[in-house]
Image (cartoon, rainbow, N blue to C red; front, top):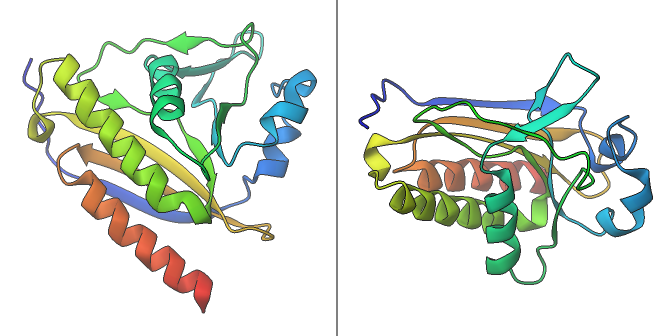
Length: 179
């Protein structure tokens, strides 16, 4: 299946979503908080359903979490902000590969970008597609330790070139944090 890519959309904005605010959400599994709180790479629900306040994740989220856990090393500690019983995914049957929204600490931003990029290239191979012909949607929320505001990076565009684009954004974010 060929997928037309017309443009790349990038949005960088401030947000009030922090690790602490995630722990306060109604859908957050408080019974797992002691374990989940250790994560500095936390997968969040992407879509909110109007039925029964269910939260939904993109269809490849389970594979994504397994990939990140298998291929990451310290200092990255990955988890998902939902219980097994609460996990629901939405299948969009689209040529676009949507990665679940993640909130991370700024220290691991370069590692997270590399992992997400590697995951997407592996997913493209499994789907027998080409990176320059396949789009992705990636949302990364970056929390600077000790800060109440976070930066949200939204990328939608071809998989090919995504890592380089996100690396430049990460460099700018780190430079601003050092000011």
